[in-house]
Length: 552
Image (cartoon, rainbow, N blue to C red; front, side, top):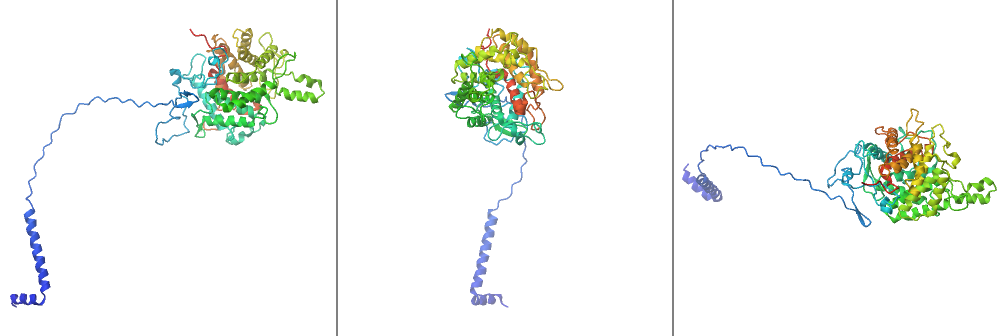
């Protein structure tokens, strides 16, 4: 076949196919020419040499100090309260920091206060010309933390402070949801496998107001108030608690219990309860000057003063007994028994001393207290006092005699009345040269705190008032400052009290005093724990009633 003829015929028969083929051929040829023209010849790879320089000399690193964080700003009324924090209380970061609350975080109050001269609190209701500058309790009056094993001479130690913290943890753990403390429902607060009480023990709700007040006083005595921002970690329950809320809830419970006439006990006045509740509210007001606590505290004071028994001589006032004067007088009006007529003059040293302490707290908190009440109480205390420094319970003939009670199988310590007499005189007359004080101190020092093998020598009530009396008389803040009595007493007291605190790990009992004493039948472990915490706060809870130690 002639190719030229074939091509000519194809163009005639299918010109579009031929044109398409021609166009593709032209495009392919053009691309080939462009590719060949644009490609450059590859260059030969050149060897690269690397030179190693001499080692650099290390430049000195500038030390950058961590930024100091201002931790002051907690305003309180017209003043700024300087509060320091530990890491468990204040963490200056916006990030979430995981923490194990079962670990011991320590006291939420900074130990730096001892060296800086600051104070972290303490009710410190001193009554002398130097006590609180001669006026009333200042906020956070005088807690000096124990930072060493021995502490300053006659003062708190690491051991006493740790015991106080553990005691506060125990009290927090056993506070009722309504803010109260009650021995009657410990079963609801305790772990049934490790209860803090003997299951056979029976308690009465009569003492709830007093127990709640004692517990509150423990926190106030450590310098905390309802305004406090610090937290305490309960390592047993691995839970963090706001101290201010604990105190506020307890105080609110008390105010709701108060009757229109000023007494706190549910049915009828019980003067132990009235004195303790009034003291708690008065000190809460004294620490903060918050008017919310002022009215109920003043109503409590007014009730205590109306409840005071009249002097049998017919002139002035006397002491106090379990019942109020009003109740006894009402009974006398309807009764015919001659004994009932005489009962209106009855008083006892124990209730009277608690009432004196409540009125003194109120007086120094700026509340109104009648001078004749304090004068009458002092007259009663003088009347029941014997010449040898011993003091009677209800009359001078009973000075040194045993005061009987439910737990008479425990040893009775007659010097407890001498300690009560010392406190009553110290906080009313403020006379360090009163000859009775030295006589009574000798009686007390002759019966130091001891823990016998059978535990029957234990008497927390005696140890509390003995500690308060001797610390005031010749302790490190006293103008006498001889340490003659306080020194040996303090050593024996600390050993005895701390040895009886429960240290079981991760149990409901930890931090409490579950070993009962002669008077624990009224309030069980709530009473024993609270009274021992107050004893260990004796170093800073009260300023010296005589105006403080003489400075060189």
